Image (cartoon, rainbow, N blue to C red; front, side, top):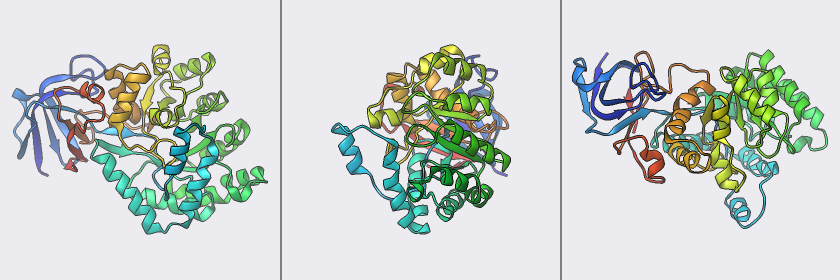
Amino acid sequence: MTTTAITHIGSLVTNDPALGDGSPLGLIENAAVVIDGAEVVWVGPADRAPAADEGFDAQGRAMVPGFVDSHSHLVFAGDRTAEFNARMSGRAYSAGGIRTTVAATRAASDAALEANLLRHLDEARRQGTTTFETKSGYGLTVADEARALRIAAAHTEEVTYLGAHIVSPDYADDPAGYVDLVTGEMLRACAPYARWVDVFCEKGAFDGDQARAILTAGAAAGLIPRVHANQLSYGPGVQLAVELEAASADHCTHLTDADVDALAAARDTTVATLLPGAEFSTRAQWPDARRLIDAGATVALSTDCNPGSSYTSSMPFCIALAVRDMRMTPDEALWSATAGGARALRRADIGRIAPGARADLALLDAPSHVHLAYRPGVPLVRAVWQRGVRAA
């Protein structure tokens, strides 16, 4: 196996306090990283770096772990520009907009869906994302949900069954029948391709009892729960996620004190994943990250990339939004976009730069990770390694 030493890193974020300055980011100044195959094998001061077969000079730039996007919806077809334009002109977002994408996705070929997925993955990778989770949810038939997951599973191990995105238009007059389908035939067809099961627990989608039935059925089939929780209104989603030991409660925009307390108490089990792209794109209330962090909850950041309510694949953009509008510090936002996302996926091999971790790295054309929030909208990612291979 060929080893590569990346040297003259001006500022290295390891997310391992023991390796660096003792902070959560584990910063090392004037650092080096040695890669062997797909794995990091050494991290430390550049003047102590062991010999390697190949070298790469970072020229004083900052390096961070590859971003971990733990919530996206990338298997879809169609465009909702008109909806976005109307919403920005005063029409409020509602869960019903998903139906537009369902119709386009059902009509698309497998090849078209995969091509669109790959286009978005390449776009995200060039912006530093090296791990992504993605969901079904735009087919809402047994065949269409299964094919979405099959296509996704060819490109990531983090695949989520979201047959319970909304009640299928085919079951508009029989939501109970659709829950039966989601927990029965559809689940059996989809479970072989998925690691996770998710539900949109929200007015206009699925209530608490329906969400519980879907998540417990998924868990019985070997899938791990995650929940779209409390995005558009107060509701039972967060409490249900904590009760069922879901890996994450995602959105967390409308939280009671009891919800915050529950997430803090479940900090080692259930991550609060915040998706600022959705609030940006819908002019909705921002999640209060400061409230969650101060209470002791574990927080992740993700893009929620989807064609309706958050059409961005840029984790740096979401970091900037979190710092500007969700009261996170630049350090907290970066940790949440890397180590926090890894926690939301229950992964220890990503989201950090340390011996034994996967060699997923992003080199910034900047002297510090703070520039991700300091220079919003600027393409700062200079190079990306994914599983030890230069990917961008």
